[in-house]
Image (cartoon, rainbow, N blue to C red; front, side, top):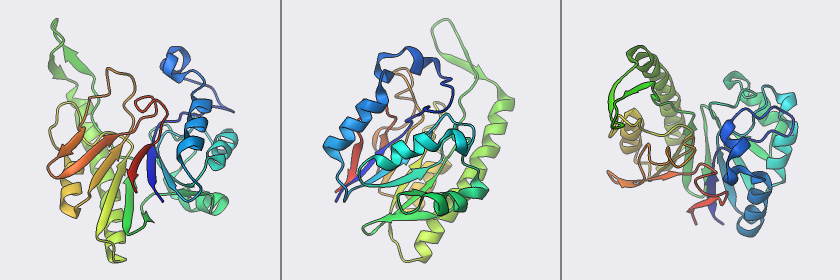
Length: 248
């Protein structure tokens, strides 16, 4: 068995495609079929695939039925976490989603799942993305402080949700953790954050995140080893639609 991860499928079988990058970038052309084929080559029925947010452009569940069916038909056990574009997924209705789609799909919010002796803890996360003020040399010389303050409130909310997931898993006896965020764990202004601190506090071995699209955004946050953890970006276009193996 193996644990795989990827994020940002941005499916739109029954909804309107809104992202210019998906309309025009070569890496997004027929990405659904590319990913399907790569999964068929890589992921077995005994494996687990974590989908790290932004599953569908659908505004509600009726616009996501075919997208979720596509995910259901992928090989392996599927665990889904929330992204910022997942409008169909109301936090308060996570239980309903699990009732509708279990056991084919598991939706993780304010809870955890498991892989072997690891707890999979997850939340959407958040990070400040500007607007930034840039000088003629492309250097950041300032930013919108009101937006930054709003971001701090969203980060605080997500940290509460993440701690709840860790504590539930810990209360059930788990001592090994893999942490999943949709947003990067740090902004381009940060070297560390509440999310990196929490990963260290609970001893998460890996931090997996998505959200960063296009080559100009791929290095907005941490890659590789940092303060004893491994950090991995798993946005679909970054991985060229090949799910990343996280654990054997």
